[in-house]
Length: 232
Image 1: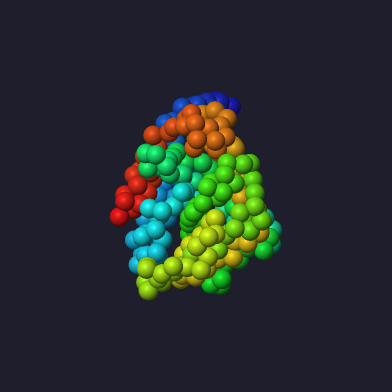
Image 2 (image 1 turned 90 degrees about the vertical axis):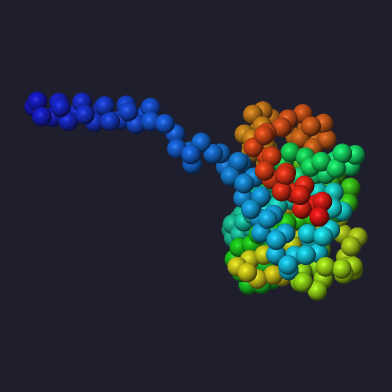
């Protein structure tokens, strides 16, 4: 009987100590913060790759960028594709990049044109119409705003693509392969829950981008990398 009592007391003590154990670094990093860091790595991966020289050269002309670090086939809904990403918009007057806004991108018919299952994706926002669409709660690419695959390949740096008038140009990299991605019909939606978690209160894309009502110092590294690339 005494042995059982000792064991119960030891177990209770262990549970109590566990409850007050310090959080690990992994526990202290939220999912939105992780996505922002992954977006920085994705941006560096594509803009340091000579096959994406057109993207790197013309980022200075972009009005915004939507970075999806992991676009998965079948990762959004059954039979479809998708992923989460962050948008940053350039201020026309100062040239500074906004705080990040969180979105999901998905749809039934989206597919990689390279046979892969996952990709790093960057959507370059080229027009004010594209920015305006992103300020809404959700919209369809190819319906509310035009989208086309961006130029890829080392010989394309100085090229003028025929689809330059598109509101969005997409760039994708998967397992070392480079190819276009069909995003026609994709649904872009704001992740209100992640925006609230990242900024500590409910906020809209307009609050973050236009009125600049909130900020998070955690985004400094991503914004610095984007600013440096856009100044090349």
